[in-house]
Amino acid sequence: PFSSLLQSSGQAPWTFLCVSTMMINSYKTQGHGATYMSPISLATIKLAAAMFVDDTDLFFSGSRGMTDEDFLSMVQEGINDWARTVISTGGNIKIVKSHAKLSVTRHVRGQRVTKNIKSLPVQTFTVPQRSGPDRPIDILSYRTGKKSLGVIFTGDGKPMREHTDWMATKGKTWQMQSIWTVHQYENEYNPQHNHSHCQISAVLYLKVPAMKPRNIPGKRDKDGEIEFTFCQTDSIFTT
Image (cartoon, rainbow, N blue to C red; front, side, top):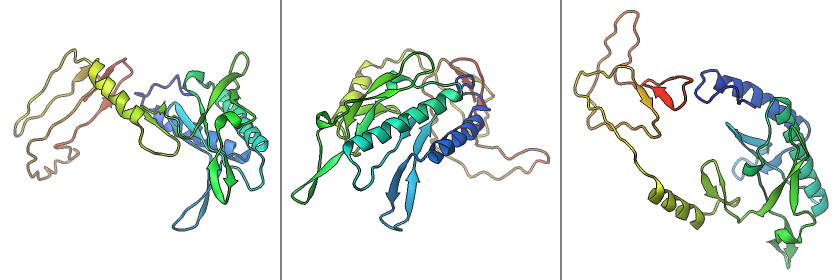
C-alpha cells in the first residue's frame, strides 16, 4: 500500500507506521488474531499480524472444540478481511509471494499428532485481488521450508538444510563486478559522496581513538559518526 513512497524516502517510515497501525487495529477489531500465553508471566496476548515493509504474516489459532472445517473457514475469512484492508489503502496482495502454513492436530493415545495437510477438507485458500477474481494460494505443512524475508524457514522454527544449501548456491553464483575503498587516517574526514549502483557497503575500523567533544557553539558533536542521506535516485545513497 506504500508503493508511491520508496524505501529511501524519509516520509516512508512514518507513513508506514501510521497506516499499518490503523490496518492492524481494524483487522483486530474484526476479531482476527492468535491467542498466546507467556510461559513465564502467564500473561495472555493476542497477536494479529507481523508487518515488515511489503511482507505481512497473519496469525490464527483455533479454540477448543472447533472442527477442522470451522478453523479453515475462520482462516479464509481472516485472509479475505486483510486483503480487503490492503486494497482499501491502494495496495494489493502479491500471489507469488503468498502461502499459508497450517498445523492441525489430533489426539492419538493421549498424544497430540499433526495431521497430514492432504487429509484436510480444504487444500487451498483464496485471496481477493484489487482487480479480477480471487486467486488461490497453497496450504503448506509447518515443516515445509519457504522463502520469506530473504530466508528459508519452517513454521516450527527448526533449522533448514534447504536454507544452508540455498545460501551456498548464492555464494557460488554471485559475482563481484567492481569494488572501491576509501582509506582514512587520523583527523581525516570523508566528504559527502554517492555510492552509485552499490549493493554492499561496509566500514572496517582498525583502531578507534579516544575523542573529546569539541563543544563548538551551534554545532553538533558528530566526530566519528557515519551519516546516511537518502535520496530518491534509483540505486544511489549518499554518506
